[in-house]
Length: 271
Image (tube, rainbow, N blue to C red; front, side):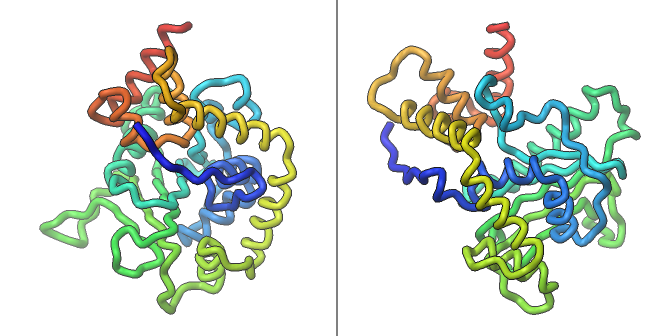
């Protein structure tokens, strides 16, 4: 397999790059909370990150670092957020998969069905996924026979469109979307985010982790199929550096669920 991929240096990374986005969000719960409140137009409780969430501090010792931003608040609500800069064609199905994963994690922690928390799956897209021009697309389960009848299962999926310029948005949301499009920060929130971006670019530990991940990615795409290739594929997929389509093609699996099960099986076999 051959591919071409432009590698950014660590100093070139911006907030829309997964590595900085996730680390900034995970290390600044106040920014994370304010951003989610802006995107959802609702209050968010006190942020509590999951203990099982991989953090930057573990990245040098642990395999399979995932860079999704997942947290729960003290209002019995869970949130999963992802920055997406390319349209992979599978975001609606991925939102379904993420929703199921969040629910399964709650159930495996001992919750009953009636204890499942309200959950939001949020994709911050730098493109217009649905082509309607809205700054935000919000999906809930509604009865087709009666549009005023909601299933009320506590699940919401939200897709942000950074390209939207339609009037009627709040100045804060307009400023954030402009920032995602590469314009200078011009709101209190985007100023704080950009300050964290600048600080992060000078974080030596994070730079080491980023360089390590980049080297592993380059090694995967180097010529030759050396022993351990599958492990490298799985590491790159879990780190967020390898698209699911490539991971499925290279492992011969037919679905992301099968890929996740395969990863779990290999990890358990090495314990």
